[in-house]
Amino acid sequence: APGETLLEVSGLTAGYGGLQVLHGIDFTIRTGETAVLLGLNGAGKTTTASVLCGKVKPTGGTVSFEGRDASKWSVRQAVSNGIVMCPEGRRVFPQLSVRANLDVGGWTHRSDGDWMEQQREKVYDYFPRLRERHDQMAGTLSGGEQQMVAIGRSLMAKPKLLIIDEASMGLAPVIVKDVFEIVRQINADGTTVILIEQNIGALDVATLGLIMEQGTIVQEVRGAELSDPENVRKVFLG
Ligand code: ATP
Image (tube, rainbow, N blue to C red; front, side):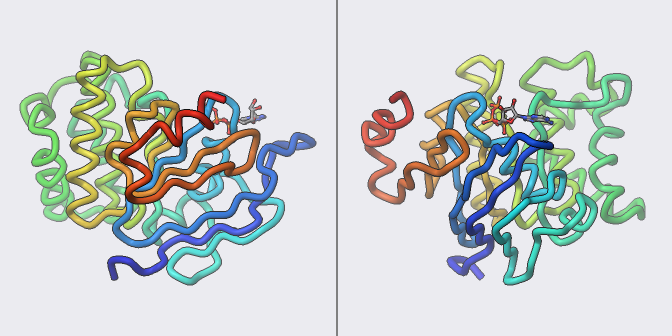
Protein backbone atom coordinates (compact mmCIF):
# COMPACT_ATOMS: atom_id res chain seq x y z
CA ALA A 1 0.00 0.00 0.00
CA PRO A 2 1.19 3.59 -0.59
CA GLY A 3 3.45 4.85 2.17
CA GLU A 4 4.48 1.40 3.36
CA THR A 5 8.12 0.39 3.29
CA LEU A 6 8.86 -1.20 -0.08
CA LEU A 7 12.64 -1.41 -0.09
CA GLU A 8 14.98 -1.38 2.86
CA VAL A 9 18.73 -1.39 2.36
CA SER A 10 20.96 -1.63 5.38
CA GLY A 11 24.74 -1.73 5.75
CA LEU A 12 25.05 -2.74 2.11
CA THR A 13 28.56 -3.47 0.87
CA ALA A 14 29.55 -4.67 -2.60
CA GLY A 15 32.36 -4.50 -5.12
CA TYR A 16 34.18 -6.19 -7.93
CA GLY A 17 36.86 -8.74 -7.05
CA GLY A 18 39.23 -6.97 -4.67
CA LEU A 19 37.68 -3.54 -5.25
CA GLN A 20 35.13 -2.53 -2.63
CA VAL A 21 32.75 0.05 -4.13
CA LEU A 22 29.88 0.26 -1.62
CA HIS A 23 30.94 0.92 1.96
CA GLY A 24 27.73 0.50 3.90
CA ILE A 25 24.63 1.96 2.24
CA ASP A 26 21.44 2.59 4.22
CA PHE A 27 18.14 3.85 2.88
CA THR A 28 14.43 3.11 2.89
CA ILE A 29 12.00 3.67 0.04
CA ARG A 30 8.26 3.65 0.55
CA THR A 31 5.65 2.54 -1.95
CA GLY A 32 4.74 5.42 -4.24
CA GLU A 33 7.95 7.36 -3.87
CA THR A 34 10.30 8.63 -6.55
CA ALA A 35 13.78 8.47 -5.12
CA VAL A 36 16.78 9.99 -6.84
CA LEU A 37 20.20 8.52 -6.23
CA LEU A 38 22.41 11.46 -7.06
CA GLY A 39 26.17 11.51 -7.29
CA LEU A 40 29.17 12.05 -9.48
CA ASN A 41 30.86 9.51 -11.73
CA GLY A 42 32.18 6.57 -9.80
CA ALA A 43 30.21 7.27 -6.62
CA GLY A 44 28.72 3.78 -6.81
CA LYS A 45 25.22 4.56 -8.06
CA THR A 46 25.17 1.95 -10.80
CA THR A 47 26.66 -0.62 -8.45
CA THR A 48 23.87 0.05 -5.95
CA ALA A 49 21.26 -0.34 -8.70
CA SER A 50 22.98 -3.51 -9.93
CA VAL A 51 22.66 -5.07 -6.49
CA LEU A 52 18.96 -4.17 -6.32
CA CYS A 53 18.23 -5.76 -9.69
CA GLY A 54 20.21 -8.94 -8.99
CA LYS A 55 23.18 -8.30 -11.28
CA VAL A 56 25.76 -7.86 -8.51
CA LYS A 57 25.74 -9.88 -5.29
CA PRO A 58 26.33 -7.91 -2.10
CA THR A 59 29.25 -8.84 0.14
CA GLY A 60 27.44 -7.65 3.25
CA GLY A 61 24.37 -5.96 4.65
CA THR A 62 20.73 -6.60 3.89
CA VAL A 63 18.29 -5.83 1.08
CA SER A 64 14.66 -6.33 1.85
CA PHE A 65 11.86 -5.91 -0.71
CA GLU A 66 8.26 -6.15 0.47
CA GLY A 67 9.67 -7.60 3.66
CA ARG A 68 11.53 -10.41 1.91
CA ASP A 69 15.27 -10.96 1.65
CA ALA A 70 16.16 -9.81 -1.87
CA SER A 71 19.94 -9.93 -1.49
CA LYS A 72 20.38 -13.27 -3.26
CA TRP A 73 17.89 -12.82 -6.07
CA SER A 74 19.00 -13.36 -9.66
CA VAL A 75 18.01 -10.78 -12.26
CA ARG A 76 15.17 -13.07 -13.30
CA GLN A 77 13.91 -13.45 -9.74
CA ALA A 78 14.14 -9.70 -9.20
CA VAL A 79 12.07 -9.08 -12.34
CA SER A 80 9.43 -11.61 -11.42
CA ASN A 81 9.24 -10.11 -7.91
CA GLY A 82 8.76 -6.64 -9.38
CA ILE A 83 12.21 -5.00 -9.51
CA VAL A 84 13.23 -3.95 -13.01
CA MET A 85 16.22 -1.88 -14.07
CA CYS A 86 16.44 0.20 -17.21
CA PRO A 87 20.18 0.19 -17.87
CA GLU A 88 22.46 3.09 -18.61
CA GLY A 89 23.19 3.89 -22.24
CA ARG A 90 19.75 3.14 -23.77
CA ARG A 91 20.70 -0.34 -24.80
CA VAL A 92 18.03 -0.99 -27.43
CA PHE A 93 18.33 -3.68 -30.07
CA PRO A 94 19.09 -1.45 -33.07
CA GLN A 95 18.01 -3.95 -35.75
CA LEU A 96 14.69 -4.75 -34.11
CA SER A 97 11.52 -2.72 -34.46
CA VAL A 98 10.22 -0.61 -31.60
CA ARG A 99 7.52 -3.17 -31.06
CA ALA A 100 9.94 -6.11 -30.94
CA ASN A 101 12.15 -4.20 -28.51
CA LEU A 102 9.20 -3.71 -26.19
CA ASP A 103 8.22 -7.36 -26.42
CA VAL A 104 11.67 -8.39 -25.18
CA GLY A 105 10.77 -6.75 -21.87
CA GLY A 106 7.48 -8.62 -21.66
CA TRP A 107 8.81 -12.10 -22.41
CA THR A 108 10.56 -12.34 -19.07
CA HIS A 109 7.11 -12.10 -17.54
CA ARG A 110 4.52 -13.69 -19.79
CA SER A 111 4.40 -14.74 -23.38
CA ASP A 112 0.77 -14.71 -24.45
CA GLY A 113 -0.03 -12.32 -27.27
CA ASP A 114 -3.08 -10.54 -25.84
CA TRP A 115 -1.30 -9.73 -22.61
CA MET A 116 1.71 -8.46 -24.56
CA GLU A 117 -0.49 -6.28 -26.72
CA GLN A 118 -2.25 -4.80 -23.69
CA GLN A 119 1.05 -3.96 -22.06
CA ARG A 120 2.36 -2.46 -25.27
CA GLU A 121 -0.70 -0.21 -25.50
CA LYS A 122 -0.01 1.05 -21.96
CA VAL A 123 3.55 1.87 -22.97
CA TYR A 124 2.31 3.66 -26.10
CA ASP A 125 -0.04 5.72 -23.93
CA TYR A 126 3.02 7.06 -22.10
CA PHE A 127 5.02 7.42 -25.31
CA PRO A 128 2.70 8.25 -28.23
CA ARG A 129 5.74 8.81 -30.47
CA LEU A 130 6.60 5.15 -30.11
CA ARG A 131 3.12 4.13 -31.25
CA GLU A 132 3.69 6.14 -34.42
CA ARG A 133 7.06 4.47 -34.92
CA HIS A 134 6.23 0.95 -33.81
CA ASP A 135 7.51 -0.66 -37.03
CA GLN A 136 10.65 1.44 -37.23
CA MET A 137 14.05 -0.08 -36.41
CA ALA A 138 15.08 1.19 -32.98
CA GLY A 139 18.58 2.03 -34.18
CA THR A 140 17.17 4.70 -36.48
CA LEU A 141 15.41 6.59 -33.67
CA SER A 142 16.70 9.74 -31.98
CA GLY A 143 18.49 9.44 -28.64
CA GLY A 144 15.41 10.60 -26.76
CA GLU A 145 13.20 8.09 -28.55
CA GLN A 146 15.65 5.29 -27.83
CA GLN A 147 15.51 6.23 -24.16
CA MET A 148 11.72 5.98 -24.38
CA VAL A 149 12.05 2.50 -25.91
CA ALA A 150 14.40 1.47 -23.10
CA ILE A 151 12.02 2.73 -20.40
CA GLY A 152 9.05 1.24 -22.25
CA ARG A 153 10.77 -2.13 -22.42
CA SER A 154 11.24 -2.06 -18.64
CA LEU A 155 7.58 -1.16 -18.15
CA MET A 156 6.55 -4.22 -20.14
CA ALA A 157 7.57 -6.34 -17.14
CA LYS A 158 5.09 -4.44 -14.93
CA PRO A 159 7.58 -3.37 -12.29
CA LYS A 160 6.59 -2.42 -8.77
CA LEU A 161 9.99 -0.75 -8.50
CA LEU A 162 11.46 0.75 -11.66
CA ILE A 163 15.12 1.74 -11.51
CA ILE A 164 16.25 3.99 -14.34
CA ASP A 165 20.00 4.43 -14.73
CA GLU A 166 20.99 7.83 -16.14
CA ALA A 167 17.86 8.48 -18.18
CA SER A 168 19.02 12.02 -18.90
CA MET A 169 22.54 11.23 -20.06
CA GLY A 170 23.39 12.71 -23.44
CA LEU A 171 19.93 14.14 -24.06
CA ALA A 172 19.08 17.75 -24.83
CA PRO A 173 17.61 19.61 -21.82
CA VAL A 174 14.17 19.87 -23.41
CA ILE A 175 14.08 16.09 -23.99
CA VAL A 176 15.28 15.48 -20.44
CA LYS A 177 12.29 17.49 -19.22
CA ASP A 178 9.96 15.28 -21.29
CA VAL A 179 11.51 12.11 -19.94
CA PHE A 180 11.24 13.30 -16.33
CA GLU A 181 7.63 14.33 -16.94
CA ILE A 182 6.82 10.82 -18.17
CA VAL A 183 8.58 9.38 -15.12
CA ARG A 184 6.30 11.57 -13.04
CA GLN A 185 3.25 10.05 -14.77
CA ILE A 186 4.53 6.50 -14.40
CA ASN A 187 4.97 7.19 -10.71
CA ALA A 188 1.53 8.81 -10.40
CA ASP A 189 0.06 5.60 -11.85
CA GLY A 190 1.50 3.66 -8.93
CA THR A 191 5.01 2.54 -9.83
CA THR A 192 7.71 3.32 -7.30
CA VAL A 193 10.76 4.76 -9.04
CA ILE A 194 14.46 5.12 -8.38
CA LEU A 195 16.30 7.48 -10.71
CA ILE A 196 20.07 7.13 -10.88
CA GLU A 197 21.31 10.55 -11.89
CA GLN A 198 24.15 13.01 -12.11
CA ASN A 199 21.60 15.59 -13.21
CA ILE A 200 20.38 17.59 -10.23
CA GLY A 201 17.24 18.49 -12.22
CA ALA A 202 15.94 15.01 -11.36
CA LEU A 203 15.19 16.31 -7.87
CA ASP A 204 12.21 18.16 -9.37
CA VAL A 205 10.32 14.88 -9.68
CA ALA A 206 11.66 13.33 -6.47
CA THR A 207 10.10 12.73 -3.07
CA LEU A 208 13.44 11.60 -1.73
CA GLY A 209 16.98 12.58 -2.72
CA LEU A 210 19.87 10.32 -1.75
CA ILE A 211 23.22 11.96 -2.29
CA MET A 212 26.02 9.51 -2.84
CA GLU A 213 29.77 9.98 -2.56
CA GLN A 214 32.49 7.34 -2.66
CA GLY A 215 30.27 4.41 -1.88
CA THR A 216 28.21 5.91 0.91
CA ILE A 217 25.09 8.04 1.19
CA VAL A 218 26.21 11.37 2.57
CA GLN A 219 22.86 13.16 2.62
CA GLU A 220 19.14 12.39 2.53
CA VAL A 221 16.81 15.14 1.36
CA ARG A 222 13.06 14.83 1.78
CA GLY A 223 9.89 16.80 1.15
CA ALA A 224 10.19 20.56 1.58
CA GLU A 225 13.98 20.45 1.55
CA LEU A 226 13.80 19.24 -2.04
CA SER A 227 12.22 22.47 -3.25
CA ASP A 228 15.36 24.28 -2.16
CA PRO A 229 18.10 22.47 -4.05
CA GLU A 230 20.64 24.88 -2.60
CA ASN A 231 20.85 22.48 0.34
CA VAL A 232 21.78 19.69 -1.99
CA ARG A 233 23.97 21.53 -4.39
CA LYS A 234 26.46 22.39 -1.66
CA VAL A 235 27.09 18.78 -0.90
CA PHE A 236 26.72 17.53 -4.43
CA LEU A 237 29.11 20.01 -5.93
CA GLY A 238 31.41 19.93 -2.90
P1 ATP B 1 28.67 6.18 -13.35
O1 ATP B 1 27.86 7.40 -13.38
O2 ATP B 1 29.96 6.28 -14.11
O3 ATP B 1 27.91 4.92 -13.66
P2 ATP B 1 28.47 5.39 -10.67
O4 ATP B 1 28.27 6.32 -9.53
O5 ATP B 1 27.28 4.68 -11.15
O6 ATP B 1 29.16 6.12 -11.85
P3 ATP B 1 29.67 2.83 -10.49
O7 ATP B 1 29.41 2.55 -11.92
O8 ATP B 1 28.88 2.12 -9.47
O9 ATP B 1 29.58 4.39 -10.20
O10 ATP B 1 31.22 2.59 -10.26
C1 ATP B 1 31.83 2.70 -8.99
C2 ATP B 1 33.24 2.14 -9.06
O11 ATP B 1 33.20 0.76 -9.42
C3 ATP B 1 34.12 2.80 -10.11
O12 ATP B 1 35.41 2.95 -9.55
C4 ATP B 1 34.15 1.81 -11.25
O13 ATP B 1 35.35 1.88 -11.96
C5 ATP B 1 34.00 0.49 -10.54
N1 ATP B 1 33.29 -0.51 -11.37
C6 ATP B 1 32.05 -0.38 -11.87
N2 ATP B 1 31.68 -1.47 -12.56
C7 ATP B 1 32.72 -2.32 -12.51
C8 ATP B 1 32.99 -3.64 -13.02
N3 ATP B 1 32.06 -4.30 -13.73
N4 ATP B 1 34.19 -4.20 -12.76
C9 ATP B 1 35.10 -3.54 -12.04
N5 ATP B 1 34.94 -2.32 -11.51
C10 ATP B 1 33.78 -1.70 -11.74
